[in-house]
Length: 122
Image (cartoon, rainbow, N blue to C red; front, side):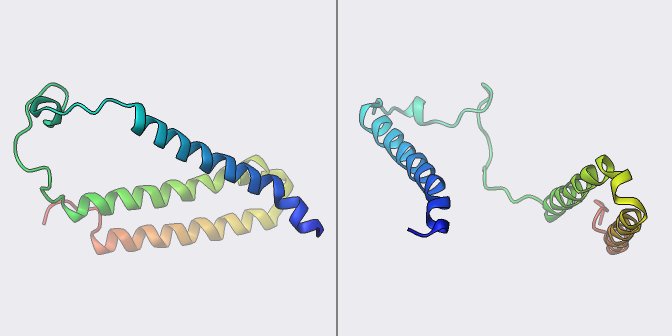
């Protein structure tokens, strides 16, 4: 066997064990689990309040856009943490790189504001 194959063998074994465990648990719970069904059991339940209306009511695109923008900028902030921890080690080069990064982030934010992506009223 080559060295590369031997190096990846434990990862492959762990992957197979994890997949096997998931399949085993799904099958066992399906086989031994209760199979009773009734009108009350199959009814929708939301914190003890009777369900009313259609659950398929469409959400505004603004909601999803705001959520995606939050995730985008939240992930960008995560990249700042290692930089802040190693600030002294990076020196001026690291400072310039982070300034460029923040500048591009600011340009993206200004573009979003200019397009009106954060305005809720039409």
